[in-house]
Length: 570
Image (tube, rainbow, N blue to C red; front, side):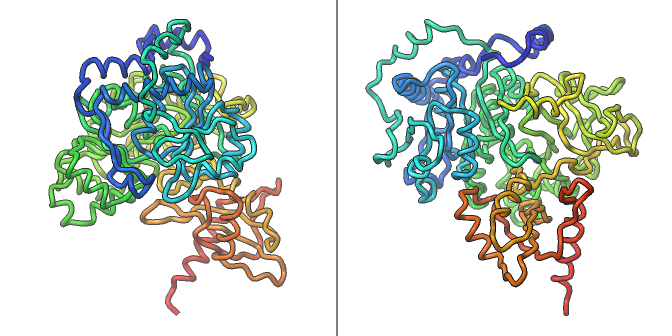
């Protein structure tokens, strides 16, 4: 299935942004060049996550297991163009399944390990997967048993790891007896395009359920090259991958950047500060990425900053919220590390504020280069193939005056082509020139018109620890609660996670609702744990507009006043 129309594909190839190489071609090259060298390292806490000991594999060991898994998938009837939903933490088998899918031309659809029945039923209905792959357990939760109870789940449930029972079939590495020529013979009879789909990701937006974001080999390779250029990765570099392999940040850097430079990817999941610092000391990575709140937490610990634990890092990526200038300055002066401010989304390539382009920490935390703007040049390699503009959401006209808010629109070889099975959403997501409308509110910075400043979101999203949560999705869950007249959730500021989920409710007359009771009820609805509210506010009514939609901006103002009143001294 080739997604990108011929005209765009031809233009991207002519400009050298796309080619005929596929992800498996880069993998084969790395195996040939560095076969006996280490390639991938499990998180040190894997025993607590899945019940198995951590593993370290060389490139040769990795390719052997990839071929074995590819053979198993073929033997189970999974092949070219088939969708494989993978619900795996950051463990070596997760990367193996990605590479095995690329080997047989399948489409890998990674979903967060926190997803439960509520999200999976929606995804299975849209993606119609041929197979579902998971670990037997994740932190004592039986994923394989859970998925058997999900409506629309595929018949083929494959389990990685040693703990397999009747709920699933074991998936090799696992199977050491497969014929090594099985995959090669099957491949020789088929044609594989670099414009074929490789992943089907999922992203939350203002719509009530996750949207499918398909991406081709060429689109991922464009992002991989950008990662290498932005981070100045070199052959053999070690990367510490702290984000789950379900979004553009992790796949674009910890997976694609790793394949492009042929070094070592060290996996980490879920985030654990002590384990992270231990991995910095023991594995000595040159690059990693963390949310701003966590970096700020480290920067405030003077003893930690002077300890030398960050010594091997050349740069750190961060984003999803403004970066505190004091944090950027602390890492620069105390550790000699530059923090790169990155703005991105699962739908496409993003913006990056490099120290070479925006050296002042006070500006780099909130400003981004206006890539593609006429007459402006940048040292960042992204400038060559990233095109942006601001548009007025009401008129669609381009905003060119500093200080005037507009919606960021972006185009380039890494931007996706449209939402999976949702032409109505795709039509709204792109303008007439083919730019993706991000839903994010920016302005041209008055103090430096070469740059954009991020102002917030037009779309109502909650970003908790760098993960997008659709407030409407959570609203719909609580619409079924019998003791509530109405409910709506918002994000409230949090110094660690950036935002937390706050539920604002209007109870039925005489009903007494508590956060504990609502959390317990929500946990029975099959919703991912990170979407469950962490604060509760009881209000007289929800602010609504003329179309009867909740005005979350006003609700956030109401919540801010109520929360401030709760913290004021008596």
